[in-house]
Each structure stands twice: as structure tokens, then as C-alpha cells.
Image (cartoon, rainbow, N blue to C red; front, top):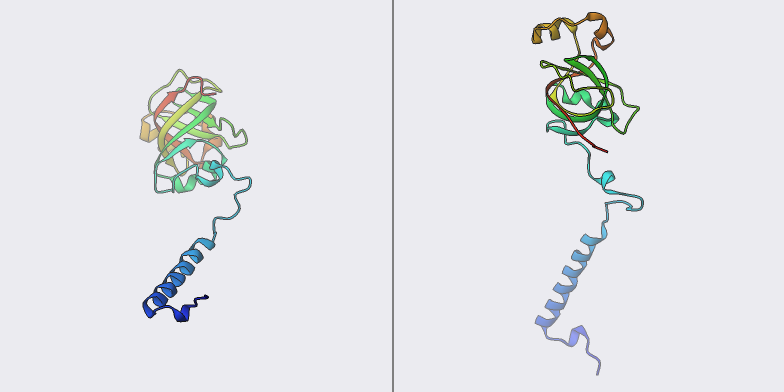
Length: 171
């Protein structure tokens, strides 16, 4: 004997129709895969290296950070990098640890740090500034900078360091 939906009682038919409708809606919600292809994707591709510009940046100094440096002006950042050049005991430049193509970034601090040497890996905590102006920095820190040493940095972004920590065996 063959049973059809028409031969079932009215309440059973209503239940079957309701289940069919909800199943269709539930399955259609699963069908819209907007995530894209996963082939060749790793965690670094999915997770952003740096937070939005309104949050604290803490990470490696690299081209990605330098390209967005204007969005960090006036904000505290924590940068890991290699010392590129020691200009004075209170000023040095950093370059990327792995990204050797990144532009050097000037770091100026109020306290002397005699532990620094080129290729030393450091963690700099400080505030990103828009443009280095020798006279303004001298006034702010109460120091006299050799203008000739800093002429190449005029109007370039820089970091005013609160702390500079030498990191050991980062490799």
C-alpha cells in the first residue's frame, strides 16, 4: 500500500510541510560560502599582523608598519627591530629584523643607552612623531644635537623612545 501526503491526517501534513520548509532555509544558510578558497592560505594570511590604527601596535618593524606609519602618529608603539646605526648615545636608527628592504627609522630618547651597536636586536617602546625637526627635539629634551648628523632625518617620521630594551638571542 502506497501512502501519499494527501492520505495523511491534516496535522501530519502540516508538520511535514513545516519540516521541509525549515530544512530548506537551514541548508540555504550553509550554502553561501563567502570565505573564498583556502588553498595556499596560512595563519599569517588570515590574522592581521597589526591591530587597527586606534590600538597599540606591538610587533616587528617592517615595510607594512612603515607604510602605515602616518596612522600611528601620536600613538605609543612597541617595535622589535635591529639597530641600524648609532648616531649618538641618545639617537639611533632601526631597520627590520627580517625585512631588510624597510626604510631606516630614527629613534630618539632622553636617556643615553651605551649598550647599542649595529645589528643589536632591540624592543623600542615610544611614541611615533610626524616629522623630525632638530630645533624642536633639542628643546623638548634639553639637548644639543649635532645638526650635521641629523640633517638627513629632517621632516622624516621618528619615534620618541620611552624605553629601549636589548633583546638577547632573538633568532
